[in-house]
Image 1 (tube, one colour):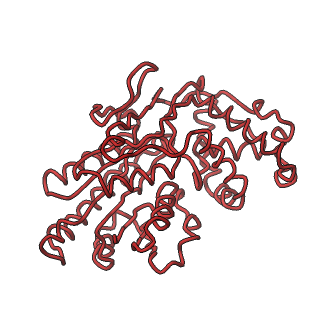
Image 2 (cartoon, helix red, strand yellow):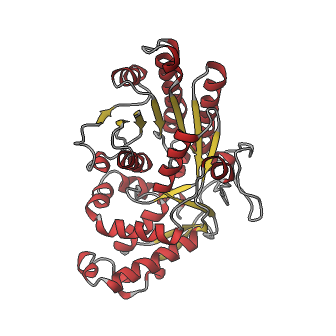
Image 3 (cartoon, helix red, strand yellow):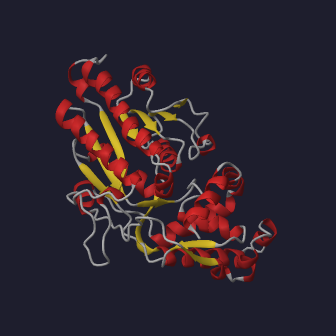
Length: 374
């Protein structure tokens, strides 16, 4: 049995991890710490909030005293760190929050973990060694690839190109340093682009789905040929599960989806899937009367090419060979099955994404379009 503290557990990936963990390890205790900023949503945890082995704490990872009390009070032995500012566009227009959360926040967590688990442990002997700080990072720390470059491995040199990826790279280095300097038992995973349920609507896949349902333009940066490796979010949770239970302390593990797609092809694939759903289920036309192009089966006409964002990385690709060979990892969802599940989830959960989009997100996205999307 584990007692797990999940930072950022009300966000997209964190909430999916919580659902996964509580389903697969129903006897473990799960504590979520989340500041509930714009991308954190307590509704993401509705299905688990009343379980006896679940606790939610509203707070900031930068509050070291709070983190220390959670580690102590709940006898936490495993910390899984998702909490981060993660949207590249936001990091371009407002990098301060990324430095504060991703670097200073991670540093604060490391200090708290060191103090409780190493400096002043309540437990003694072998139990002191039985802890884990797992840091969730991104493939963007490796920089960008050309069309013919081999995929990123764990030995690829870091070369971040945005304030977001630079802040994540810095946090990765801090985690590594706390292991080598102080003996903190850490692991780090670098993942490719996630998608799936609870994906915040500012990101490409949910933005395309919800814009189609509102008959709004589908904005494509530049020529749309930016390539990403797409990972279904539950496969990410499964990968972290393997790292926690089988991974070597002090190691990094790449978790990828083996699904490289150009952005424009993603948009076209989603357009076709939504059209098929409208064709198959006539009630969707009544539920989403604004989706005129989906009803008419002409959603591709919504595609609009806009000015590319500054410093846009051309291609990301994850080589997960190490994770596969050492841990037995392999994604269970293909992109075709995963994207079909995602489209269906958004069609079935209008109340969730509509409530998100009715908030401050709308004002922010308008501001970004005015700056980058001339």
